[in-house]
Image (cartoon, rainbow, N blue to C red; front, side, top):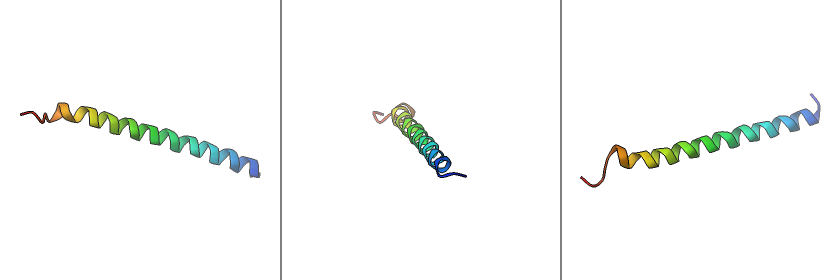
Length: 43
């Protein structure tokens, strides 16, 4: 494996991590938006 191969590999790993981080952020936002609907605070 040449050095350029490992560099491209680490770049793709960074993309995967960024995509994973975006998914987690989206899920957290959705959970925050949904929680008031699940258990209303004004009872």
